[in-house]
Image (cartoon, rainbow, N blue to C red; front, side):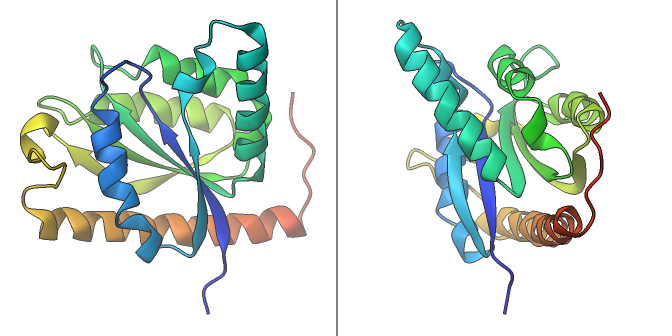
Length: 189
């Protein structure tokens, strides 16, 4: 029997008409069969609000979802050799929930497939006390990798990559969850 955990799937883009939705939808159609997890969606676009009340409600919900997550999967584009401002704001707005939890990445973009954004994010999450996992899924020339229905061309190879990522993320999620429940460390400020 697999140990169940909570996975927060985080959108890395808040742009209108974003391609991130296509990638996330493809992942969500397959990931539940690969992990024993309750998946919650966290979208930085929810923080873009005209009203302070609406933004405060979104911040509260996101804080709750991040805090209860045992692991994170970030789906991020690469903009100008880096990750997005919306993702940076999301990460920096919520300091505590990342500590002692694994973070995995799916990236997309042009020729590099978003890998430069992932390398920057690894440094940020190391500072936050999170453990980034080695396996990633990258979509170079992402727009060409998906057909008009949002399905990946060459799905067998891509599904195998997602399976390896899911397996590694599950192991880290369960292992670090047990560690957090067993040993309480004082947070370094």
